[in-house]
Image (cartoon, rainbow over all chains, first blue to last red; front, side):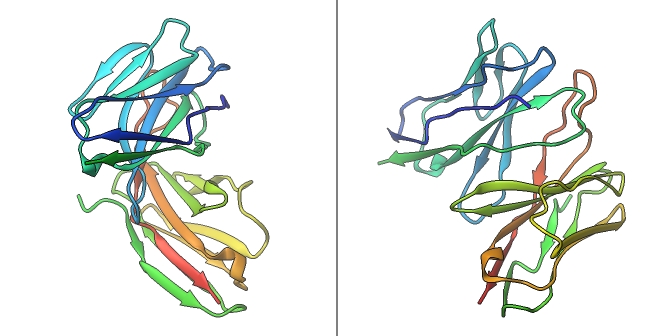
Length: 111
Length: 118
């Protein structure tokens, strides 16, 4: 399974755009990249998933360069409620299901 | 849909007692996962099932832990006997499909069971 590396923590202010980058240098050809968000006292929640280039939904955008060795989760105009831990996972297509979470990035949004 | 339902939300027990955590996955989901979360070790995958069959239990800490899925709508994680180091938040998650070509369904997590063993 491809290992992921993310910053331990990040700080931001309300209204700013936040970009969290995840490194997955040994990503395999069929691997997907998935991001989850976790608030205190809750289980992780799916945010976005992509394979290449750019994916956008109502919550975030995911940018994946051509070599796919990294990906960047972009949160536009964050608010205090975006304070959470963000996890990057590399999900192998064909994987029988062993999904391993890394340490995640703790995002603190300040007023 | 009510989502993944776990019970109880909180469990406090004494060392040596048996603990049973319960999970009801989302109807129609093929996969069920049990994770454990602590500050020190983060989110750890304990075991997962596909169509009620355990596929990988290599994350189960030791023989004191056991998990079952008697049918598609119910799973249990049992710790017997419990120890203080088992104190953690235990999450159950389910997924519609994994590993299908060009399609990967996201995990849906419950709100967890906070276990405290004194």
